[in-house]
Image 1 (cartoon, rainbow, N blue to C red):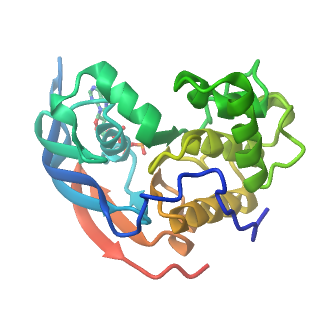
Image 2: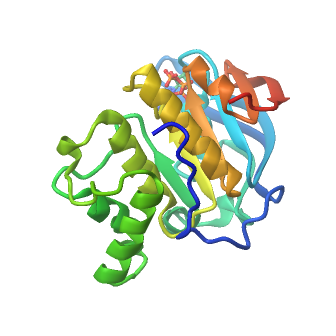
Length: 249
Ligand SMILES: Nc1ncnc2c1ncn2[C@@H]1O[C@H](COP(=O)(O)OP(=O)(O)OP(=O)(O)O)[C@@H](O)[C@H]1O
């Protein structure tokens, strides 16, 4: 589906404006205390990410990429430092308030896409909308619209097992954005894909960022360098390099 330009008709158009701070991390440290000693997963990370940015987090295995996504998504709280996401300071929110913030503002996409096997593509995408209290018809209509914008016309009623790896990832991304979330976090979204499907997914994410969403992708896949607008290299829990770049795609 390379070259398919999404319009995100169904996406909140405003107030998502390019260049507004959506994520702000100040002096974040995250330590794990294990029987074998303390592991410093993140070490004094400060970072601001704006709407419309397409950020690639690159680093070796164990460098802290997933931990950083988890901190931004409010799935774990840091040992020290402040995290502000979509104008909310995460440390003062309860776990359920953070879950609610994710439901409204933060989509998360994983390597194995985490789609519910028994649900159709549109039911999977409708899930977060139903959780937000949308009626079934309204949610499924919005889901179908989003799937169509993502080049999945005609596949709405298929179950995950009846979709290719790339199609499943598109469904997962559509679910991540359903309802107009402003932030999309993706952890190795192309880890299980061939290079053609990987390009297509990275291009889709580029288009999504072009609509004002802040897209942050943790990956080992160098193909992302052709698409991301900013590359952050992490080593041993610290930012080694943070480069804003012009995508070449
Ligand atoms: N629950 C935990 N307990 C102890 N150490 C942990 C825990 N979770 C992660 N770590 C450690 O924190 C560090 C960062 O892990 P993280 O999963 O963020 O790395 P990563 O860059 O995402 O790796 P990969 O590319 O392999 O997914 C690693 O040293 C890891 O072993």
